[in-house]
Image 1: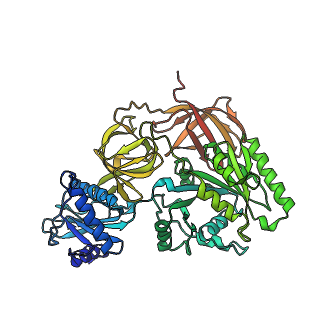
Image 2 (image 1 turned 90 degrees about the vertical axis):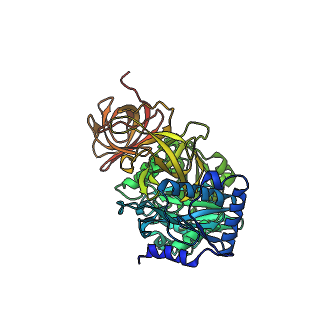
Image 3 (image 1 turned 45 degrees about the vertical axis):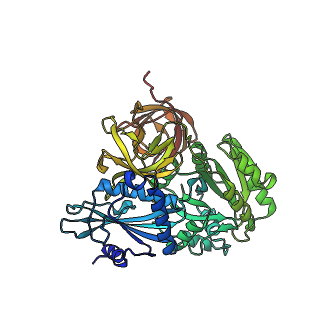
Length: 557
């Protein structure tokens, strides 16, 4: 018997009994189980099950009252999870995990994987008559994204970026040899609070008593403890790091998962060419950014002042206003930080000087989000197939709101057209929710489309929208680095929102040298995308890299 099947067998063997934490349900429907009176009764029942299980209850769906495997249709299972999510919300709980199995005509269950995980979605198994699932319901409401900020870190190699994060998330001083950095020297293979697994590499939080930190960032249970205990979370994402850039690091920056940027500058080295490049990328995307001068313990006060002046000079050169946190305080930094004002502060991970100030700044910074009153827009970051749910598109909601049952448009397809789809369900941090708004990282199950037809870079829009995808656009670009010059026919990869596509550049004046800014026509090589005036993008090709802003989406007029 496989481990997956064992989980189902254990739940059934424990059985549904008075005072226990297991509940059997063949099916839950909105019309019946959310009706007046019934909803309150079932929410109270769920609360009782959760308390009986010391904060955790198990709901087995798709079985009869005596535990026999019945199996229900995928649509019925999706509706059952929606209803269970609403009941859990009313009982101050949430669905933490769902596992599903296909049930054949003989009533035998075959493991179908973890319904919340993209990695579980694989080729379909043998045809099944229905689905049975085990949902783990845990006490406590889902942490609102309003209390979870995501910070993208950047900085020259050996400028203390990983050491700084290691000290923040553990609260432990460094040994002067980068010891706390070792906490982060692992493959970031776990998904934390809805972030892409290949981006997140550190998390800590705050409660009423102060910081909630990890004892061992490598241990999944320690990260889970921080997520459960903290009232506010801070996740760190490695955005640009070492050369050459990785595709996933640019994806984290341009895909709009970040709330703030944090650039490290070592006090002994001072700002470097790489520092300038990283600063240009962070600021060119209008990301509110702070600069942290690290290794303050190994230089004199005079050298530290000199480096801070160099940082301030570089900020002014790119049209930004530096704000010294030491002179103006954390309150001013929280109030003023935006795409033009950049707080600057000095720290030491060895002596811990400045770390309390950085803690306070990260605790008080507000969540950034798109406009919630505008029409719904979400660029697809990735897609996957979930048993009993179907095609799921995940990404960060750029603007507006979305609810289960909404009718949307998905595209553009290869031919530039859009397809009508319906929102079957919404998940946020692996928890089923009824609705979500701008700034949320969500997975949206779609009815009316195959998972194979959902691609990264597509966009979800209201059904009554009139989208006009473009193949080429005019842009103002700045070349951050290039071994020679950019000329007619230059073909980098353009990263705009979640679009990552090869494009052909045609500079207005024929060429652009490193450090130059100018106009260029940009044409996607293979297909059209939704592009809007004012959007920022990054382009790269080998050691060449730069940033740009869309200024005209109809340059032929």
